[in-house]
Length: 154
Figure 1 (cartoon, rainbow, N blue to C red):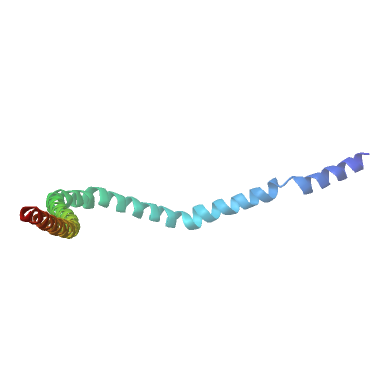
Figure 2: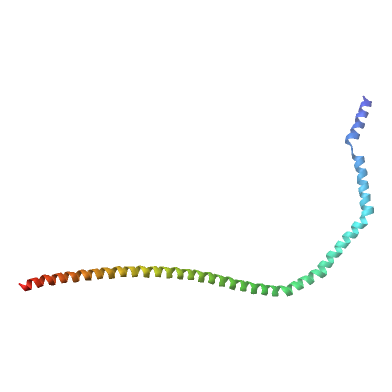
């Protein structure tokens, strides 16, 4: 049974114990990184650090100063542009109102013309009725005068 346990232990270590292989890989990685790449990585980090220092000590203050000088003029230009745009918008609104007023004027003009035509038609009807009434009255008075003339001769 001892032999079987040894065999089982050996099979188990081969199948499930990966420490020796992993340790070899870890040693290779550490050696590769620290010995071969370490100096390159350190130089790269130093370069990045130098760049950040230069940016924070020289470039950033220059940019801040330039921005503080130019921002007021940019804001003034933006205000002027905004003012011009507001005037253009106001003119467009006035033009639209003028268009609406013109449309209302045209509509009222058409309504007024229709009203005048209707009034002329009604006036013509009234004149015609007046003429007919006048004619009828004349005929009546003529007939009455004839009747009176008959009675006078008696």
